[in-house]
Image (cartoon, rainbow, N blue to C red; front, side):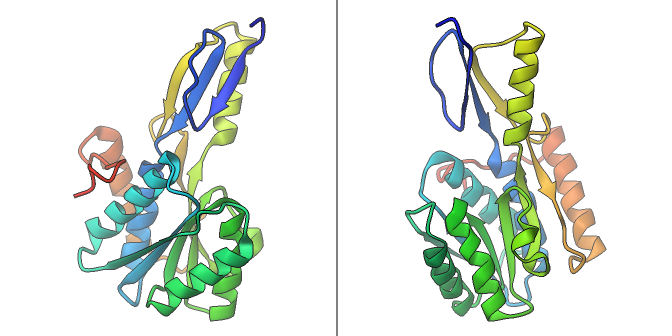
Amino acid sequence: PDKKFLFIDGVVEGDNIASVTFREHESSFLTGVIAGLTTKTGTVGYLGGQRIPPVIRYEVGWVSGVKSVNPDAAVSIIYADEFNDPALGKEITLTLYNQGADIVQAAAGRTGVGSFDAAKEQGPGNYVVAADTDQGQLGAEYQLCVAIKGVDTAVYLVSQQVAEDTFKAGVQDLGLAEEGVGLGSIASVVAPETVAVAEAYEQAILSGQVPVPATDEELV
């Protein structure tokens, strides 16, 4: 009780606990925009680890972003129910590619590492959209862009609050406005006009013009 705690990706009640959640759907919407305008096959895929709230937000944002710019695009979704199995991630991603997808967003922890192995096996023209952090070290030529999630931002923010004696218990929800999520590491194969569209959508989200769905019920 005399210590302060930071809990990430969930909410725990307590006078000495700061719970930080993220609006993953906002960054994933932007990667969806990039994918929807970049796909050559008209089909994109999504590999999820488990259907827990953060991964659902990634999924819903991704589908919404793709459909906003490419309403006719098909979105194939497969969950691994596993965050720590790269071999399974490779197998599922190959399945998505074989279903016609040429871009797959992976929000599956270490399972998502296998998506890069699948892209390499499938060959040029097949891409992975990474979640949370840049994963270009796994195959930069196969990474289309990244839905950034600032866990480091959360750690810094709450640590700063402790250092400055401004620590706040309760929930702190970080999105684009708080620089807690974002779009990053856009590959050179992405057309400049596509990047411009994504940037315009980002501003529209920040201004409130474009509300981004976060749940199955909100996804229309």
